[in-house]
Image 1 (cartoon, helix red, strand yellow):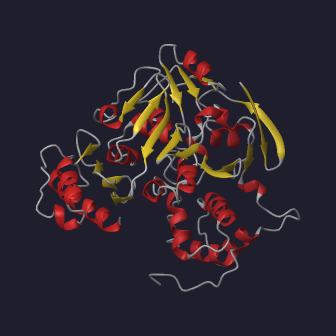
Image 2 (cartoon, chains in turn blue, yellow):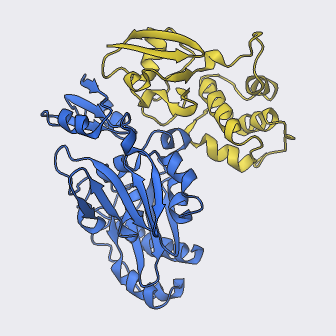
Image 3 (cartoon, chains in turn yellow, green):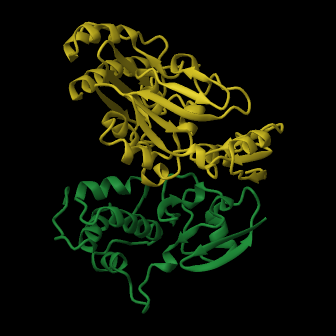
Length: 261
Length: 160
């Protein structure tokens, strides 16, 4: 990979100042960024590590909202949310593998918005709030297609706030070599609504299956979606699965997640 | 830049660029070639080491991120008297390796598992090894070795 300047500030203000340089990028766990740089698909002039900033790590639970700081790694989230938000804990405990989960972070996953990343499905279903150094952004507005988000240059995800659902579950159909979801669905049941977040399936990245959300709000059972169909037009088609296959998986995985709630 | 870390209990330091990976630093700067580089794409786990007690893939972490950290590699796994530790001995006893290339990463992953789960089930062991690839053994003997290292009976495993 091309060389770069490495800096590791201890405060958010120092990190933001360092990111003001042209071609500087934040580095969190690096589990996507480092492989991308090895392939020379990305060549920052400077990497600003966020892992030395104590204020960016930690989880808190108050008033029915779970707040996860941006540089908190997956292993920590999986462990610490097991009782407060088991649906999310279950999703996080299956990201990558144990070594990856010790490095990868929620902020990195959300900011990268890989079309097959797991976290965005939960963020969408729960209508989470993505907090940055500058503002708060609703999940619906934050994710803007494959690898595209509402983040400005040099803006850092400092926290993600999830309203904790009454019940929730994540089902992913893994592509067996990479273990990324070929299609993954997070279902979150609240008192007054149901959220269905779908990842891995669409050319437009993570999305909410709103038709299923309405049907499930009226009748929370897998039967409620049995007559719905998911259009294949915008689905990803590749050697692992056709668009029609992925569209089918959205429905199957949603049904399984509802049944497991 | 100069990087210092405690590796297997000893303070060690060397030069690194920003792009120097922890795996490269351990092998080329510190001469600790027990940490293997298999795929270099974060898939195979041959480069698994522990940083501040956590299992990581050293090919997917910059050396600079480990500045000041406690690092454990395969070279530090033997007992003080030079005998193999219980995981290493179990790999030998149960033929948990053939070519041996993945073994340092497998042992480091297994040690990490047993630190948090003293008596893992066969399924838990297989799940924990998802990020470690072995192309010789078919994993069965590795799973048996880890069952044995945790003091459990070694069952006949699936597909035998």
